[in-house]
Image (cartoon, rainbow, N blue to C red):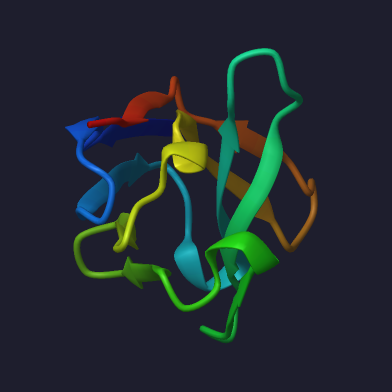
Length: 118
């Protein structure tokens, strides 16, 4: 059974940093796309970053140069280092795993709140 549990959210001032973690169980990292999404109040959920099966990373434009996604296969953890945070980064952040092989299932964590405010 796949389980994703996020942690690390909280309240931070603009310009500050947070590191989100997603503890994953029941999945194989090398055959999965590992992603972070976020959903701000009143807005649709949006994709933030992906680390692919090869380890390559991609980011939405608004976080490039500020956020870093990484995976630790030994610890089965997906992380999102967020630096130079802005008020517009305020959202619930979700960990997502999409299998790159059959049955191509997709899984979500429960989310963790990030609030950027002075």
